Length: 269
Image 1 (tube, helix red, strand yellow):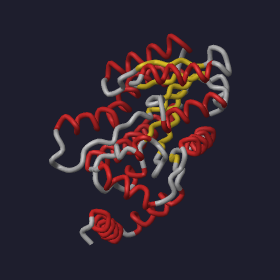
Image 2: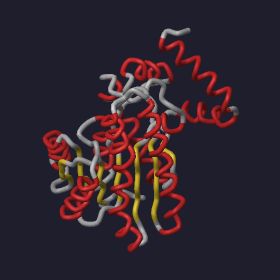
Image 3: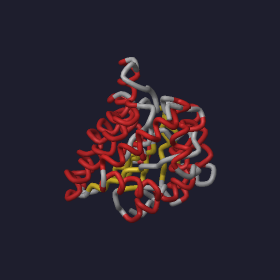
């Protein structure tokens, strides 16, 4: 997809990967809706973009952790720039640790990391299928292909996010829908730096030890290339594909290696 004069919505776009995606798509010529729970910050990001090209960006406060929040975002975006061409469900949370994690934290993880994708797709698909064209992108994580030591909710929801993107592609790919799924490893964002991937120090330490930490702009550049090529997996860290192939080749060996990593990180080794 050529993003020139396309209408793109990016959630979780007030900072980090989401902001970098919005900025890169805007430079590619898109009209961009910058959506985030932080309404003030997303309005600031949109204003900076519109300063370079008038009436080309809008900030919309949105709680995508509810179905109504997704409906309101889609309707507001359509009222601003017309039919949405590409929706990037990027918003995510890294919360919870193990089976003692409170139920409301589990609910938050599933609502934002998984159900937000489902709710957005539910209300985008009718228009896209009618016109025979649409692009759905989602941010999962390398944890969605591998796993996340230190956080059961993060591991489960990111696996589910990848699975949903796969299902969307195989179910609607022959009807004009394009789907891509972003699975980064370490990225220099608040989630990594503030230990917000639950299990705080443990999870962040694992991610940092697994490979290079990229800047959000580097991730956005890779994402744009995949979208232009209309292929599925956005993997800005090549080492993730190596780890993934090893997992598939010998599952038990991979699990044994991950147990050793967990023991080392947690000080059990």
